[in-house]
Length: 103
Image (tube, rainbow, N blue to C red; front, side, top):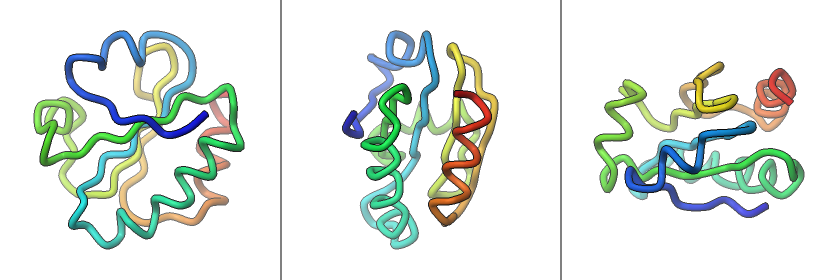
């Protein structure tokens, strides 16, 4: 499944069930751009995981809801509830381990 853009309006329905990874990023953020290929590959390699991106400049309410203070921030949810958070640039292996805990 490809990475999809997530807005505040779509949020509740998108994360209500299953495993969901949200990538909080900004277009001007170099570490975010460096992390993006790993996030996109994870989305393609893990069909039972929904992966969304939230631009913190366009959706500040969602960033505030998850207390995003630094980007990139990844939030892993299971059935609408946050279970793991990762802040900063991380290797793909760490992403895989994070997701494996909820799948």
